[in-house]
Structures are given as structure tokens and as C-alpha cells.
Length: 507
Image 1 (spheres, rainbow, N blue to C red):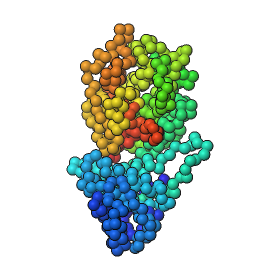
Image 2 (cartoon, rainbow, N blue to C red; image 1 turned 45 degrees about the vertical axis):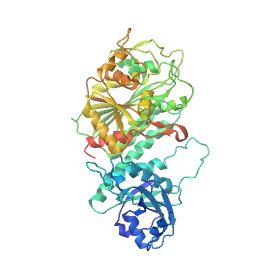
Image 3 (cartoon, rainbow, N blue to C red; image 1 turned 120 degrees about the vertical axis):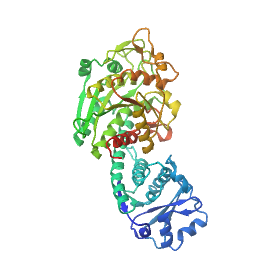
């Protein structure tokens, strides 16, 4: 899909040659600016159709028109915008719903190209930043999401691909056009990063192994001139990564520890470190999971995939920032050599862990990666992990769980999620919860019981992050969808990229 910016006055929209022009209709059949100009050029054709009751303007609804008199475009697509005042609300839902409706309708037409004018709408609320740049970035991401499909493993493609190949977004001439053009490039880069994250997440565990993930990281590094180092089992043993390697014991697939570096900031600037959980398949180990929906445990590497997707996005943007990506990746499998419940292992930090449940393995690989992060003297560290089912119960599939040892860093991430509409919600990380991790036989247990499971998992990780500012994103509920729409979502790449863009002064 190709995206572009079309700088055009609304009154000239009727003369644009395109397969489809998309214009907005508010509830009570009120036409948006460009729709009004088309109505005038067609001598009231749009108004007449609306008066017949074919469309009210409910948000996300659509009506496709052919051969509108006085309009050069082959088709006119009317998109419902809902109540006009709702576009100024801070939740951004109305605009996104309207754009989603646009893409659903567009891809079912035979149009090869389209001009989408919804970016003309005023979505800026008080103290909010939903300007033309925000609208363009969101539009690109929604379009890419609607057009994404994963069918490379099918011997026969079920449906023909949509004819739509080019989408232009309307922007007024002058300053807004420049902002829109820059935002388009950002949106395209984020969409590419999200697609990489999805591709990796959707691949089955027999293809997307730890070795495969490492190869994709090396390929990404070669394409974008990043630094990449992949540590094998021997090097990890030398570093003392006993906790990480305990998870890998039951698998025939060798573990890998991936180190990526995007060094586009000043040499003296401390890097932001992203740590992504990369369990390419999680059977639960000896603490075997129930069979139902176990296939979805191929998504347990979505934290790792989101780090790779974020690196792709910031590399395409050439973001002036130093960023390090750390990805511990392994399978978690049962077997004669697998770690047993009750085993005690020693982490890279020297702290000992009693493993009460081998299905709480994500924290065991992350803790050694978090210790490894110390060597970069980081400005901050953010880990991303499909860590706890408890987070799904607490927040559902809407918000990512956020915990950390620095409220200012947490607020940065919350703000980035709000801007990106890839939202997170902060949970407490009080010392009161640490007692649940007490062990009679080691420095700590790897689980703290059912109560507050998301929090106690973060408490475990916090014991390895005392030397820097740290935040933890639990994406167990947001990294993929189940059911009919089953598949990786690409989250939280938008949140992470907006966080890094803001830090680099690009937002």
C-alpha cells in the first residue's frame, strides 16, 4: 500500500481524478467541509440522497455512491462521523471508528486509489495534541491494520487481494501540509514495525524458533545498519545466566540472547534499553498448561517481536536516539532435562530463585536480561512481556498493564500510549506485595500465589532493576486476539515508538 499527502482546498475536491473520494457526514445528516463542496458541485445531489434517509451519519457507517454529477471521482464514499462534538473528545474513539469504517468500505470497492478527506476534521480538544499530524499518523496505522493479512502459509489464497493500492490523505496547504508529510513518514514506519511484529507473532513455533528470531534480528541489523550480537548457550553460561538457561533445559531448540543497538544519538547520551520476552512456544514446562488454546502460546514471544518491530520503525525514521534492544529467547518445554518445580537456580545477579511453577518462566528469562542491561548504564529500561494471565483478568484486551520503580518514567509511557491510542494503565508496585515471594529455600520464589499475580510478577522483576529507572509492560491481554480474529495485534509498537519519538524531540 502506498500512502501520500494531497494538499488541496475543499472547494476544488470535485475536480480530483481518483477511484474514490471519501467525505464525512455528521449525525443529523450534516456534511463536513469537503462533502459540502461536492454537494455544491453536484447541485445538491448528496443532500438529496441524505434526505431520503439512506444515511443518518452514525459513526463508522458508510454509503457508496457512483457517478455523482459534477464530481470527477469515479465513486464518492460517505462516512458517518457521529456527533460533531465527539471528535473533540480526548479518547479519540470517534475519529478512529470513522477511519476504520472508511477502510472497511474502501477495500470492498474496486477502486485502485482513493482520496480520504477525513484528515480535514478538527479533532483537537483542549490541552490535547490531536492535530493534523496525529490524524495522519492514526489514519496510516488504521489503514495498514485493515489491509493486513497473514496468508503466506496457505497453499491457496482464500480471497483475492483488494484492488486498492494508493491512498492519499487531505491536508491544507502550508504548515499543515508539512506537518502531515512528516507524520505520514512516521506513520508508515510505525506500520512497518507493527507488521513485522505481527508476522513474527503469527508464525508457528516450528518456524519461529529462537534461532529464527535471531536471524531476523541480524537481517534487520544488516538492512538498517544496526549493531547486532547474538549470544549462544556457552556465552550465556559464562555470564552466569542460570535463571534464563533453566527455562531452556527441556527444549531441543537452543536458546539465544539477542543484543541490538540503534546508535543515532550523541555518543555521550545514555541509551534507552528495551527488553522483550521471547518465549517462542510456552507449553508451561513440567507445570504443563491445559490443552485448550495452547496453540496461542506461540504468541508468548510478542514482547520480543515488539522490540524488533520498534527497532524497524525507529530505524526507518532514523530517530536521533541511542536505543538498545535485549531479547532473551527460548522455548519452554517439558522433558527429561526440564526444570522441575522445587528446583533452585542462580540468576546472573547472584540471587537464587526457587521455581515453584515452571509456567512462570517469562520472569526467569527477563531477570537475567535486566541484569545484563546494567552494562549499558541506561537512561531507563522498559521490558515488554506477555507475562501474566492475571493482567488479562484485570484489564481485559484494552489496556496494557504498566508497573515500574519511577513514576516519571511511567507517566511518559502513559502519555505516549494516550497519544498513540495504544493505552496502558498503571498498577501499584508497593513493597507490601514483596512478602508473597518469600521462600524457605532460596532468596525468592518465582510466584507469589493467585492474588495480585500481575503485581507480584513485577515485584519479582523489580529485584533486578535497582540500579536504574525501570518500567514493565505486561501485554498478555493486548499482544494478540483470540477467536475469529485470532492473530497478533502489533501492540505495543505504537506506544513504544511514540515514547521514543517524544524522547528524541520528534513529537
